[in-house]
Each structure stands twice: as C-alpha cells, then as structure tokens.
Length: 305
Image (cartoon, rainbow, N blue to C red; front, side, top):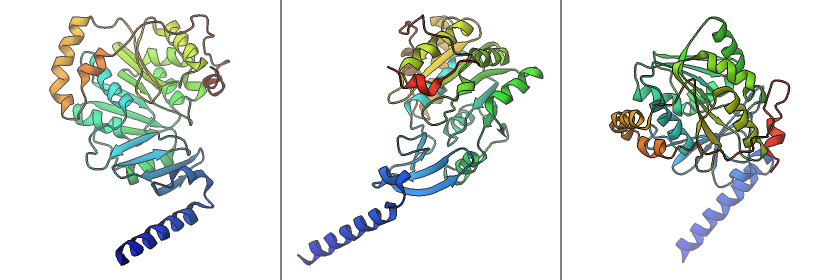
C-alpha cells in the first residue's frame, strides 16, 4: 500500500511539474508528453528539439515534426519520404554529385554519404541556426566530400548556373513551416534546376501538402520537365521525381535496383519496394495555373481544397 501511495505521489508531482514547466510556453504545449530538449532561436523561426522514448525530433511549431531520427539506430531513416528520396538514386546511372536544398537534421545527407562514400554532396541551408542544431543535437557531421553552404537555395542555384556547375541529383527538401517557400516552387526555379542537371540527372522535390497546391505543383513540373513520376509517402508531402531527359526503361531500372538492394538493406531501406511504388497517373487538374515568380501563393493554395 505504501509503495502505491509513494508511486502516486511521484507521478502526481511529475505531472504538476510538467504542467508548471509548460504553463508559460504556449508554443510547446502539445509536447507535454515528450521532453523538450532545446529551443534554438533564429532570424527565421524557433527550432524545437524534442526527445521521445525511441526518437529525437526537430520541429518548427506545435504541429508535426520536420525531421526525426531513431536513438538506437541513427543510421536508419525515420520518415517514409526520406527512404523514397534515397531510392531515387536509381533513376540516374552512376551518381557522382548531389545538390541538397535544405538540411533539416542531416539524416538524408548522412545516409547518402554512407551509401556512396565517394559522392560529392553540396548542402545549401538557409538558416545558420538549423545547421548548428543539426550538429549539436542530431550528431550531423560533414564528411570530407560534403560542402555545407549557408545561403538561400534559389540564390545558390542561380550562382551555380552562372558558373556552369552540374549535378547528377538535385534534392529539394525545404519548408518554411508547412509549405515550400514560394520562390522554390516556380517555373523559373524549375528551369534553373533543370539547367544544373547532367544529361541523366534527376530532380527529387519533396513538396506540397495537398489541396489545390498539388494541382499547381504538378502542372508546373510538367511544363518544365514533361512526364514525371511521384511517390506519396505516409503522412508527408508528395515526392516528385523529375528527369532532365527520359526515364530509364523498366528493365534498366530493375537492373539498377537489384545492384543497390544489398547496399540499401544495410540502412533498412527496401529500394525495390519504393521504386515499384512510383506512379505516373495524372491525378491533378491540367487547367490549374502554373506557378511563376509573379504567382506563387503556396501557403494559400495548400489550404484550398
């Protein structure tokens, strides 16, 4: 009986402490059952680091997480979309260089480096505070073949285009909060990215959260890249897979996937399942307005059904 009473007092005290701790922190109210490890203030947003029993996550607001990692297996990717991004490597014959726009916790960049040690990776991250948090709380460490540039992604792409840089893969994984920044969602930006790709290059864009925006994103991508494939991850935005030129044939793709299977299994990624789940059906409204530098209301469109 004494043990039960003591346990009850401990739990009650812990509950009161949690309520007191978060009483004046409205932004963290939904994380009462988790442990808020750190808040990093930046010029763009507050960055929250949250500990859960099996994961550590990064968030920009009370709703959802931007990046998570497993505590015991940090080399495993947590999000379904991140595994699909990794699988997109099979759409180019032999990747030698990658441009990533958006760092997050650094899990995708780290996974690419483990899979392809000789791959040259350029990561462009707008927020210096994000880069700091990735290193201090998510153990991200740039390898010898990585370059981290703190800059706006669009500005970097423009400069890279001017000096003739080329990449086999360009990955867009940048969100302001719940939507892609408007200047990274336009026909002009897509054209700039396309000019950076090698002949067999692929653009992997993790973007849109449904609503009317999905129609606009799709017609914009189609206007620049022609026919494309996409993957709809569980609980996340659509992943667009856009080729500079034609997609490999089914047989060529099957051979590439089989070559990669053992390597990807080491990170618990079933590349054959993700490539097999790619779709190309036109499920969007072809009459939707193309997003341009003059018209790109991504936040508003994402709220329209």
